[in-house]
Length: 319
Ligand SMILES: Cc1cc2nc3c(=O)[nH]c(=O)nc-3n(C[C@H](O)[C@H](O)[C@H](O)COP(=O)(O)O)c2cc1C
Image (cartoon, rainbow, N blue to C red; front, side, top):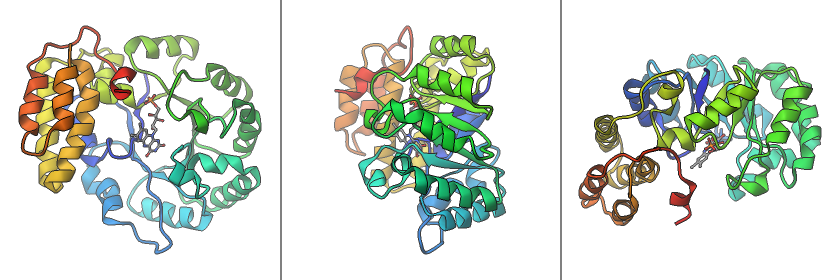
């Protein structure tokens, strides 16, 4: 099975990638969250923290760019090639208002002519093969056939489809029919992304599309052993989760100021709490914690037994 970890800005950083790869594995490729190349044509310290090869040593990674400026895309792709990457991923899926307002991410799907000229320019000069991660429309799934018709004109290395519109963000169910349409209509290699939260979800997809690569986000953050399980390995033990938590905390503390390290840990714990039975009270304590009170709040979570079916629970995120 071909399992990829979805890029999640603020969650799947280099610290997480290194530790996840070492302690759990089961992920064939890790996508680096988006980088927005600036007109100054230098990577920021934050970008470099994510993409510097020494920060991702031994971890198979694909960097992602978020821009609608073809020249800046090509500048960044050249830099990434020099750093040793062998693929670059284009983000045409980000639904955030601040991103789409600038015509980037899924905002690119609103303007087919501009998208076409952008793709003409990058595919004719990119030093690296380009893969794309996309949504199926901005407002309406009815936009999908026309968008797909644009992508199919280019030698896209892989098209990862998150079958939702921009308006749907990450909520509700995915449009399985939009993915099926692409699978039937185009020859380019596809990757599926969206709502794969459990071994069962992934197996059901594999039954429909044998061998289809799966990009998993929230499901793998909530259950870090999911990739390993899909490769036939064991579920996470209590001890492993504790070790994973402690390694993340130590490494964040080494690399970031206390406030940033604390907020990264709080974010991870929101997801990891899905591994524990009756986690609400402990999660509330973690949410309200300060860097000083965090260790006690985390210990509260780790005093709980494992959930029978650990996995991403959307309810945790709506409270
Ligand atoms: C907090 C957060 C940050 C994200 N950051 C990125 C990103 O940098 N690039 C990207 O292509 N998608 C990003 N996404 C979308 C995910 O990669 C993925 O498409 C989404 O979570 C749906 O997949 P899932 O149902 O497996 O979680 C982000 C999603 C979340 C929740």
